Image (cartoon, rainbow, N blue to C red; front, side):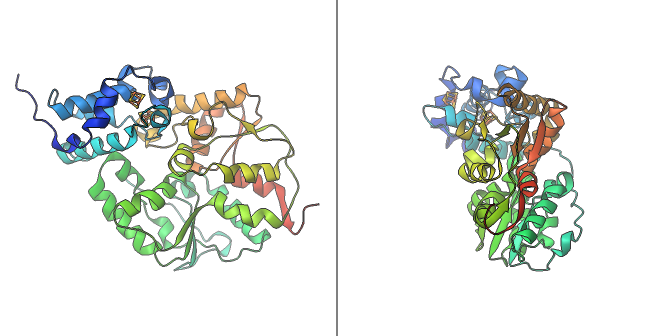
Length: 364
Ligand code: SF4
Ligand code: SF4
């Protein structure tokens, strides 16, 4: 049988690929997809070895190979655990991009614009201070948007508004799948809409990762200050009157928010501000957080795996005795709620803060 051609674009990653291919799969237990699938082929070692075989021309790049690479949700847990800090996420993203160029884009659900209602009168054609919830938020967790606007009303922050940009697909699915020509088109459109703002508050961890890290890589740097909801709320809450919420509450770090963006402290500061007791930490927290399957297109591409991943995070929270699990990532809230059943309550952090905040002024 004829050998496949060596794959030139992957040659740039020979060092990273070789590191994994000759590694005894030391990060295996950290990969949530491999754990959920219980398959060596889903491990970082398995996916990188496959890419190394393609790079060397030992196997052909087929749809099955592309499907295997698409199982990685890009959570970055392998890199955090790796003694070499090996950028598996970046290499597998490049591999998926090569696959799209050779085999065509993967089929996926067509983007449906969310229905945007005029929430609490917070709508402007060109907001200077723009709220970007992320399309999934408006579709699946709109209560968090309402809670955030309620907080703005209570805390005398009148200028945050939705605008036409919220109806656009920010391009996460196209970018993550490796369809970077499609992503560039979508991102350019979003950039045109958002670049009139001077401040942008983003709720979705995936969307924030795109706007802060990925858009600039595609030459689409925003002039605005781009901040996560938690970064926006910390100073706003400093003068709030708070009726603290009781109960044992644990916090789940979304992998994009924590490992990819370094937003660890603000969510914890906010929760410590509104809870009667100490915040409970999960055994896997901070840069060792466990992905709940809410990201990386897993819910659509590999729903059974995503559900198992969410269930494992719920089990971690139940094991530490938490009554409520909080996330500030709407994608995570949706996945975790679906997996929780009656084992534990799952709250969006903005909703919990809204429960606690009474008015501006000094705490009583
Ligand atoms: S990421 Fe690091 S620990 Fe994991 S397989 Fe590759 S070299 Fe080994
Ligand atoms: S980025 Fe996450 S899902 Fe992908 S191989 Fe690494 S640990 Fe597994």
